[in-house]
Structure formats: C-alpha cells, structure tokens
Image (spheres, rainbow, N blue to C red):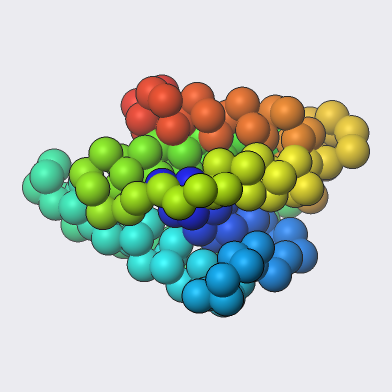
Length: 150
C-alpha cells in the first residue's frame, strides 16, 4: 500500500518539478522511472473510472498554464490541494484492492514528502509547494478522507 503511496507521491513531485530521487527499493525490483510510470497509469485509470461513474469523460491535463498576474492565488494552497488529491486517489486504489502495501512503504512515503518540503512558508511564490509537515498533513487528509476531503 505504501509503495503505491510513494508511487503517487512520485508522480505529484515529478509533475511539480522536484528533482527525482532514486527508488528506495532495496530488492531492485523497480526504478524511479517505474514508480512514476505506475503512479501515472494508476492515477489516470482511477480518474477515468470516477468520471465514467458520473457519466462524463475524463480528459487529463496535457499542459499547465502558469499564473502571470500581480496578485496571484495562494500557490502553496494549490500544491497542498494536489497533495491531498494524491492521497485520496491512492486511498481509493488501496481500498479497491488494486494496490497493496509492503514493509517500509509508509516510511519511504513520509521521507519523500519531507524531502520535497519547502524551507519556508512563502504562500505567493509560484515555485512553492509547502513545508514538509504541511505536505504530509495534506496527503494524510486526502488518504484518510478521500478526494471529497480535499
């Protein structure tokens, strides 16, 4: 399960421009690129199913348009919401039995979130993602409450 959490987190972090870390899988069964590919595939499948249940068609974002205004949104809040959605998505995948946990997965996930945290709490920095604890809490909120909690 936690391995899946890590895979989802890897996808979020890779999409946010955080420098990727190598996989911590000591058995050598996968690589960081494998984690990203798995997280992306599972995330896309999850959202496709959710939209299908609502009678809609899921269309993944293909290009992000950066904000260019003078008084922008709270960038950190947007990133924390993305972390929350990642947690909710992963929770649904685990709850449906698509993913299972391995020993050490939870620790790996928390370490990855901590490593991806910002050193300061600058809410209007377009490159900000949130401090380590903020990111961990947002992800946990989504994981425990599902995407509706986000």
